[in-house]
Image (cartoon, rainbow, N blue to C red; front, side):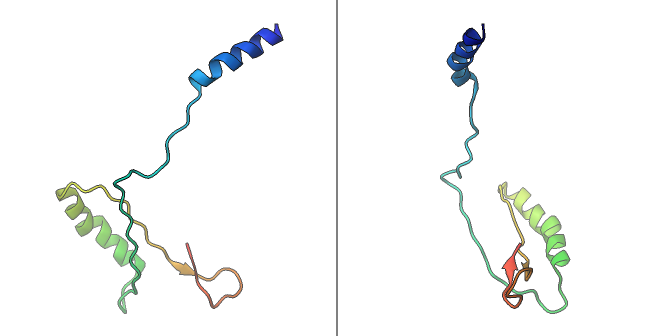
Length: 85
């Protein structure tokens, strides 16, 4: 009986198991800009701008976009060299 179940699984598993395709779309564009905040500005100011003016502009122009802010942090030796999170 166990042999029959095993044969059944081996025959039908390839028909039911699939993997999601995680490759980037061929039309994907990736741009990275390095910048410094103006004195008196904070990351929260950048996020607020992204949630208001930038979001309205993207919506108005029907643009699909993902944005990320990378903050430099020094969490491992040598502490004077920043890593990114």
